[in-house]
Every structure is written in C-alpha cells, then in structure tokens.
Image (cartoon, rainbow, N blue to C red; front, top):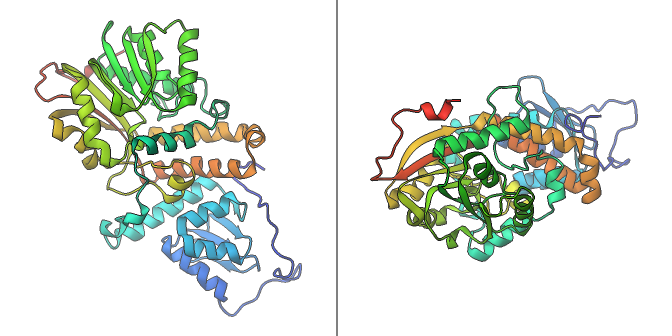
Length: 424
C-alpha cells in the first residue's frame, strides 16, 4: 500500500486483549481506556478521527463521520498519549505503535484545524506557551550542536528528496503545475528581483544551506557573494559545487556563525536561517545587518513564522529541529526597529510552502527504501511524520512563510513601483 495513505504497524495487538475472531465488541459504554481516549480527543478539539483500541473498542467524539482511523497498539501507548501529549503522539507513531488507516497529511491537518477552533473559543491567550515549552537557546555552542543534529546527518539523505537544486526552503510556484525544480529556481529569481541585484555588487548571505542561492546569484546576476554557515556537511558540499561550476572567485563559502560576519555589502540575504537564530538573538542579528549594509543597501529575510508568538511543535523541536523557533512578524521587528531598518515589503508564501512539502514528501516516499537502508524504519516514520505534519501546518494556517524586504531607514534608493518584482 502507498505509505502516504495507509500505514502498517510494527506491533500486533496482544492476543489476550483481542476479542475472539468474528465476534463484535459489545459494550454498554466506554471502558476506562475508552474514557481516557475520549479525553485525548477532547483536548485535540474533537477531530473527525476514530481511534480503535487494542481490545477492538472504537472511540470517536466528533459529530460527523470519521475521515480516518487510527489503531492503538496497547495501553502503554494510550498512557503515553495522555501524559506526554504531542510528544507522546509523535513518538508512538515513530515507534510503530499507532497504525494509520487514511491520509496522514489530512489527519494532521484535521487535528490542527480542530485544535485551532477549540482555542478560538477561549481566545488566543489559551495558546500562549509555558516557559517549559520554549526551544533550546541558540548560543554559539548551542547553535552548532542544533544545526549538526539536523543538517549533518548526511548529504546523501537530503539528496534523495530535495531535488536537483538541493534547496531546503520554500519554493515559489509561478504556476500550480510547476515542478519542484522549476519552483525552486523561480524562488531564487523572486528573491533576487526583490533585492534588485546588479552585476559586480557585493552580497552577504547568512545561512546558505547547500549553497544553491549563492551560486544562482553569482551565475545569473553577476554578483560576488560571501556566504556563512555552521553546518560542516553543507559547507563541504557547497564548496565542491562552486569548484565544479568555476565560481570559487565569485562565491566564498565561510564556515562560521552569522554573529561573526564582517565586511560591507550592497545586499544582505538570509533564506531559512532565522528559524534557528532564536528570538533572544534578533536584536544582535539586526546589529550585524546594520553594520554590514551600505547606506543604500537592501536586505531580505525569508523565514517560517506564525500569526502569533508560540514555539514550534514540541515533537518536531525535540526530535527533528532542535532549537528552532518560528517568529511572528511582531517578533521579527526586533531585528529592524532597534537599528532603524525600514520594512519595504512583506509577502506570505504559506501555500507555496505547503506545495513544496507535498513534493518533498512524495519524493521521500519514493526513496523510503533507500532511506531505511541508510538509517532504519523508525527514522523513516519520524521523517514521514515531520514532512506530512509540516505540510498540514501550512495548509491549516498553523505556520506562515514570510519574506521581508528592508533597507536602511535613511535610504532613498527605493523602487518607485513594484514592477521589478513581477517583470520578465
């Protein structure tokens, strides 16, 4: 079966707990375990999902028919859901203790939408995180460790599903039927047009991934780029690619933290790094930008974000993206306001990221056997959940994707219209 739609559990229900074959489960009301499961569903906002316990008991709290079914392997798994919430749910899926019968992405999107509706009934104050749920702080040492745990797990792994560009950020789909590669190239051109790059200008990039944007700016727009990153695997890959393209004189890939950036530039760009900076460091990042930008320079920050302050999903922060935090626009202003940087343009590409993740997920599923050979089945399930869950979060509006263009506050070298953004 297609793993994107139907999953099989690695655990079979205990024979002693299961009813005899062919005999229906008859109960006057929910069992103790059933009542526990009802509590879990209530906290999730009563999504249209039916849970089936290891005993065969079926639990659903929504008024509408279920869109999917989830089977729970044993009581220990149920208790994990009750006690550890979202982290317990993610771990149970990764361990094969939850068997999903339905579209995984649709299930997670349903949970997001129902949870948001339940929170809306009591106001956004109910969504404010406790201090215990905040991401790990991104000190110099902490940032290196966080980045190492996510990005340095192997370039071969990422190459299996990111596509030819090796771009691990939101693509920009000029048409709904554009391929992933077409959309990633379109995203890079979209960024370059916003920055109004001209030949021979100097660009500084903070957090360059596998070097795709830096090399694109140099090849297509004739600029020189100094790009900074703290992932050893990515730096090695980017330098090799620059050498293969004959661009080592035009692009310098530097293995260092953004806090150590020096020099002056006409344009400052950061695509997909702000999520790893930590809100406590935004003012410092703004200081780096203000120090580097020439008086008539301009900059762009591209980042996952939220409509209101809240941490990343706790399971993703703990198991996939340690130290990550998606800021609200209000929080991002801490980068600009203290340094008199004027915001010129804000664009939200939320649905473009949902489409990007859909393409990544499909490619990941096509490569699942190779991923399992590199790691194991638990790793496959973890990353399937991460990709499907992220896609669902963007579709449901739980996450946003902001592109913010800015310039020094006293610069009058500003575009008179927006024609440069969409001109051919």
